[in-house]
Length: 132
Image (cartoon, rainbow, N blue to C red):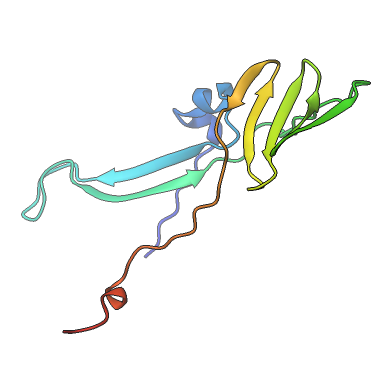
């Protein structure tokens, strides 16, 4: 027999945390545990748990970077291509690897090393060549 519980969001103890948070997603974790000890488990033993995504409380507005009259600068130095807007942002690309070598915003380094894909998989028993 399935049981359903209908709670209003305003009545929950999590309501203040939910309304005051700036997080885009908030999950409510619900757990059920034993109130008294039994022959098979002690008091407090976890029986069940679930997580519920709470509805968005605010309309999510995407962050928009406003364009300016600044000119886009592009400079090629050996294997590095610098693209950016003076005193605002700069991206460095490596021509050989295609990777991003650096990223600065307002003179602050956001990324110092390049990002490169790493394609691998965990070894399996089949890699051993079968029974010996």
